[in-house]
Structure formats: structure tokens, C-alpha cells
Length: 458
Image (cartoon, rainbow, N blue to C red; front, side, top):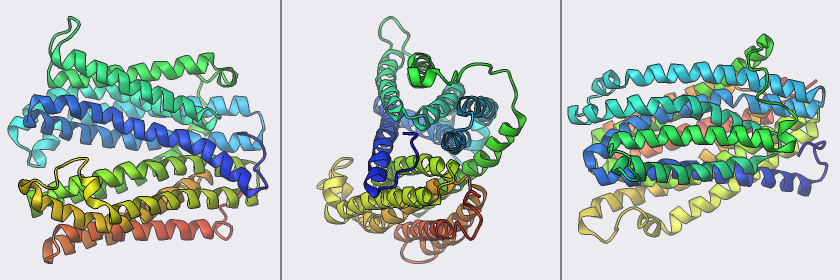
């Protein structure tokens, strides 16, 4: 994993696939962790499901963005390994300071969750839903601390050459969450039946169990133990703290910009009509699942590019970036083909296309999936482009690109076509596509110009 960047293309392909495959698996399993909650909460009724969905949407956005914040550890550690200068000590310093940042950020997330009630009232949610969501969120918020620290350790063990650990522990999380929901939601094994709040308790237990699992593996794995990652947590390293914030805060901002565009699209669909919102939700599920593959490839690209960056190997940087681009966009081309050729087959995973009451939703969902086929290619391209640039520790300008691309041409087009033309919901999806095209194009232009922009190591 930490050898000098390979000189042969086939070796780079092998190294990238060995790293990306378990990261993709962990991403897909993380989606399954959240899906377990939906399965159990849906049995409590539509109002409970709506309350859970609102709370998890807010909490999920916070945790996803803070995962990007502590994800700054990945390019820093990769560069340190590539330089091979006092790597053990430098890696430990990076993990320690990223942990400090993550802990403080988790308390900020808790504070935001405490404002969940006013935020929901501000967006015009139903009083009955808010009454259920607020106590649910006030329990769920305590999962922020183990969730953010666990995300940091998952990033660290992958960068240190153990990406399969994250896959295994996330799989453990799926099982723990299913068992926890069964126990706390419905009251088994002597536990009280807590209903919706029980699902939040299960999420806290699951996040805590996963954090302890990472700590145990780091203690027992020979390669990881030599770094003593969990030692001397009280010692500050102010320069490294600044490095983590300088790289991590823009990543956090990029995630918020992207998530904001997609969440805003859901609100626009709600204004256009219920059928449009339902079709949007179903079509977006396929895009979200497929996105986990280029997202995992992007995580691997950050590490592979970062190793070459630390080694001062410009050819290795180029090779790692090209292989990541081919992997990410290549898969998304297959995903796009499936959407174009088999839309009704995919829809059957969520709804019955033959049912008369679903006719309107099916027609709209198929239209959106036609746009999503092109959407897939550019979504994969922007994810991999951002990952490659993070390997060069370049995050500030990509954040500005995301803010511009998603919110000016993207949201602007969605608003205009969705609300002021007959296209309606289809216009909103065209707006999403436009935003992704702009961001993907600008990120890959920046990557292609990396030498002239001074992004390569001296």
C-alpha cells in the first residue's frame, strides 16, 4: 500500500481497486444502516416515519458534513506516508488534531439539533410531526460524538492500508442497528417499548459500538498499533490543527453546498406536487445508491494521489488520477445504461409500476431517470475530481466551485424551469444536471491545469 507510486498502469489499477472496493462496500453498508431504521419505524405509522425522516435528514446532513471535516486527515496522512519522514509520529499528530476538531464539531452538531423544533416550524412542518420529531432528535443527537470520531477512524485505517476494516465494522453496525431497533422500538428482551424514540436509542448504541470496534481493532492490529493512534490525546499540535482546519473546513463547505442543492430540489418538488415529490424521491434513491461507487473511488483517489504527492512524484499523481477517473466514470456509464434500458425493472424495487394508483408517479419517475442517466456520469466525475484534488490538499477553490456551480447555474435553472415553465419536476432535474455539469467540468479543468496552478509538490 505504501510502496513508491507504481510505474506500470496495471499496478496502479490493482492498487486503486484493492483500496476502492472495500471503501465502496463500507459506503453501501452505511446506507443499509439508515435503511434499517426506515424498515422498523415505518411499522409505527406514516406520522412517525415523517418525523424520523425529518430528523434524520437534519442529523445526516450534519454528520456527513463533519465527516468531510475530519476527512482532512486522509490527504495529510497519505502525504506523510509518501514522504516517509517520521511517518509514525506525524500520522499520530494528524489523527490527534483531527480528533480534537471532530469532538468540538460534534458538540456544535448537538447544539444545532437542539434547535430542531424551531427549524422545523420555520419550514412549515405539521405540528403533530414536530411533536414526535423533537424528542426523537434530542436522543439521536448524542450519536454525533461517536459517529464523527468513528468516521475519522474509518478514514485513518483506510489510509493506513486497512480499508477492509471499515467494511467489516460497518457491516457489524447494520446488525447492531437491526437488533437495537428490534429491542428498543418494540420492547423485546425485557426492554421497554420506546416506539420512535427507541430507534434513536438504537442509533446511539450502534454508533458507540462501531467507535469501540475501531478502537479495539487499532489496539490489536499489528500494523495499526505501531502508530499508537489513541495515545497522548491531551497534547496539542497547533500547526497540524491549522492544517486540518485549512483542508477540512472547505470539504465541509463543499458537502453542504451539494447537499443543499439536493435538499432544495426536494422542497421545490413539494411545491410542484405530491406525485412529483414521490417520483423524485424514488428516482433519487437509485442515483444515491449508484453514487456510493464513485464516492468510494474518490476516497481511494485522495489516498493514492496523496501518497504520490508526498513522494513528490508528478507522474504517479497523474497516473492515480487517470485511473480513478476511468473507474468512477466507467461504473457510472454502466449505471446510466441500466436507467435508460430497464427503468421499470428498477422501479419495482420500490413501487408496483402496474398498480393504477402509481401510474402518475411511474410516468414522472421514468422521465426523471432519463435525465438521471446523464446526471450519473457528471455526478461520478465531480466526486472523483474533488477526491483527486483533495489528494493534492487543494480544497478551498473546489469549495468555491461547488458553491457557484450548484447554487447559481444549478439551483437557478431548477427554479426557473421548475416553477416558471411547463416542465415542472423535469425542469428541476435538468437544473440538478446543469449544476453537476458545471462543477464536474470546472473541477476536472483545475485538475488538468494542476501544474500551471502550482498544485504539484516542488
